[in-house]
Length: 246
Image 1 (cartoon, rainbow, N blue to C red):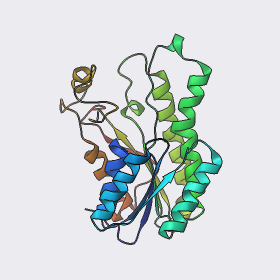
Image 2 (spheres, rainbow, N blue to C red; image 1 turned 45 degrees about the vertical axis):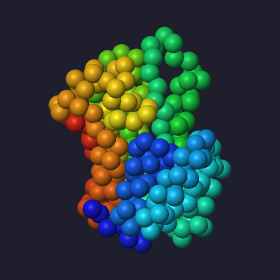
Image 3 (spheres, rainbow, N blue to C red; image 1 turned 90 degrees about the vertical axis):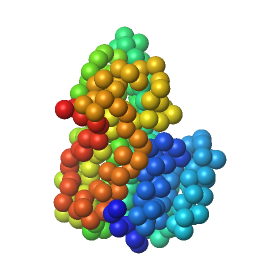
Image 4 (cartoon, rainbow, N blue to C red; image 1 turned 60 degrees about the horizontal axis):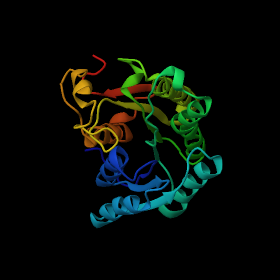
């Protein structure tokens, strides 16, 4: 496991699923962790309690990261309560699918706000406090590399835009020793996409391993990129997708 002793991480959307697994994994590696939520306060506080019960430090932040003031305040609260910020994990996302003819401009704006705008705002705010060794890690999607069917125009658009944003951050912040990367999950067993859901068999058939992954698989990849092993990895995406894009 990566040693993150003395580091401070902010995990957006950390109240459940992949975000909660990431928060716990980073804390287990020694980082103090702040996690954001919009509505699921009880779940967010439960994650923080589990971290603290294991001897870690945690903070809970209510923030809508699509709003500039909220994004900036989430970072500032992390700095105030935990003493800085070394790692930003942009996990908050919006799962969207449907036929092109049914996509509205309002729907498009909502998806881009959550999946792209919020990452930009959080990265902009966090970078002001980061020094050499800083990490910006975003959770993307296997749709960056393969769109297997129709109805995924919005998802593919937003998550591919995230790649471009990450490459720009890598170039902008590289001279300061800050890396920017994306982790692209394949089908992961969460409450948003359960392994016993209606489309689960189809999703499994698209992977080389023929099965769903677990939230801890994504958390392990994030922890690696956040630690010493990720110091020379930037401007790129790591597929953790069971061979979805093989």
